[in-house]
Image (cartoon, rainbow, N blue to C red; front, side):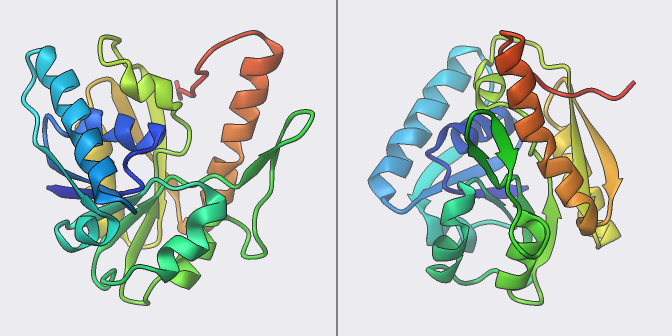
Length: 216
């Protein structure tokens, strides 16, 4: 599959690119194409150093959309609306939201928009023909980028279209050590998104690192 990552030069986007590029064609996108090229070079060097195949390239965010079948929005919540307003071509694309609306106060707090979740806000902002799922919300960037570590993580996937959700479940399962679970319709995304501030609070107050979830 051809995967475009909008905001792919951030820690989350770069980490996901490293995990997906051995099995898929990944296009890292950025507002500044030079940064995307630099990030793709780092990704390629890191992955191939481990003896793994790697298919990755760097372009603008718009090119990442145009060149891909699946688009991952690896952008902070505060940048969702201005970023999506500057881009086009989402019609008939499968879009994945790993976006978590939250704030760091004395502790991490879930701060959803009036729509109820970042995913539902994104659904409102994207064209009606877009197929939207949420996934990758609960995995720390450091876990994605630690390629020498064997992952043992769960990723809940939400979506209203069963075929699109099945595609995302298969995409998640293509990453060794990661289990994907159907968490229900897009309306459930708020329950998944609020896990991230919870995990960060657990890590902080228990002096742990990169806490994740698993279902057994």
